Length: 239
Image (cartoon, rainbow, N blue to C red; front, side, top):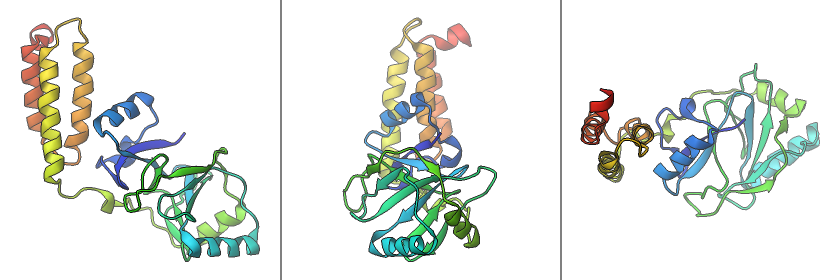
């Protein structure tokens, strides 16, 4: 199934997003708490790509290709938050193939391996409009004519590193520092039999997602959690 990541606008919060993306409800709920109000991105590749139709030019290109090659089957379609006439068509393809990112014409792109797309109910960072489902149908196999066009086009599977935060902002650093203070205090106050072990695992995972993009350093987190675990008796009991 599809794997998701939390994103800020269109930018992944997590530096290692291609590998940590998941469809586990427990992890997604934890990310929703950690990155409150975040957008959601669906990671592409490994058998799934998006046909990105951008505005009037994209629609005109797609209509021309359909007249030349054939129709598109009914599949999952998302209306993007950018423009009223911009859409994401989701398609499956044989997983043994590699489908990267490429252009099929003006306003028409394929997003595959190395990419991710904002997914409903995300909000477009420029327009404030919500991504919405235009069709709820299941994702189906791409038609043969579309696959042939994609395979003829120059492709890139390079991960879109421009989405990452190269230098953490003060806002992000302050957010991580506040999270560490609050979570450490909660952990220190827990006693045996009151969910102490689960809390430690949950807090450590949450803070690790902030270490990855450089919002806070690992040594600081480890020292704070060690101190909290000493105060609540976890170290004395388990070492």
